[in-house]
Image (tube, rainbow, N blue to C red; front, side, top):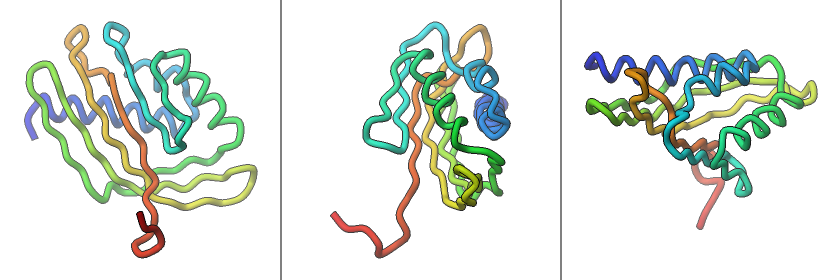
Length: 137
């Protein structure tokens, strides 16, 4: 990976690590403050266009989730130009939801922009895929 690709991946890693620690401020620290944002969550009603919306969504997540643990990355794609980067990552996650243990797979597609020489997330999409053969269009 190039220096810029490593730096973009580092920003995403900070975001994911902050999420697993239920650290909302840590998550928000790697979101852009100078550009519009758009984040699509795993539910059809989760469309966030402001930092305030993202903060509220994470607060809601953390009210019912605990012991969040990311597994080893399965698939990773990182590309970066001097001012724009894309990170796509797939990894297992386990957590407790109201004391029920949950294990699933998460996929994130994130777009990052340069802001004061640091990579910041400006757009993203989270996905929880269905197992093969369990869903049809």
